[in-house]
Length: 250
Image (cartoon, rainbow, N blue to C red; front, side, top):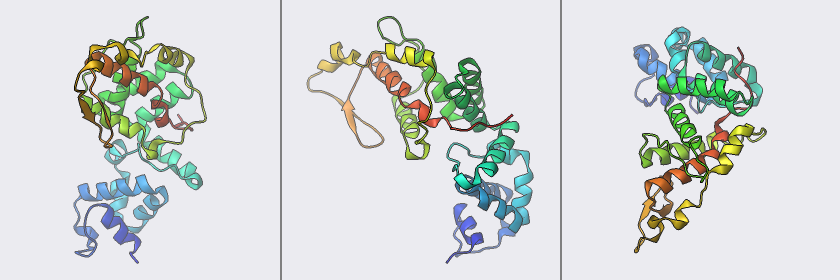
């Protein structure tokens, strides 16, 4: 059975069978291992810092909290206080993912649409890929006209939209269903027409052309207008899965 130290070593992508001399690892590798440990189990994060001085030194650096991965941070029921404290420290350090999560909480749970969207946009500017996607798709969804057609196409490739959609629908980010979306968001979402392709020329291509998603599913190719209308509709009815059910306290 692997010791806790060996498990941490493996998390960093280094074989525990080769050498367990933790002192020889560069700070960048220690940072990677400690960040992965924190994401998987916040209790082990504390144990790691106590057990090895190198982890403790890395864990005190502001850079660690600025760059820590929070999107997939496990919300352990018996470690709510520790998880909240960790996220709060990341948020106060300017971590883009922490800012994104706070923005999502404000937008979708507190219904502070302007404040939440501003934080989502800021997180995107600071490099959070998921925040960039959400910001662009919100702009797209809110551009819907009276005919149910959206207009402000973001500068994303179709492959990127597919990748991000797979993320927001993944099991790691699901399970957050106990709240309602903002009224203005729901009102806007209901105006988006998901049936635009039915009357479009792209639906009558013979023989039909298909696109393959990252999950292996196939769907008929759509022109840009139909693609973005369907993408906006799907986004509006799935994106709430990435909002957390408890706040990052100020």
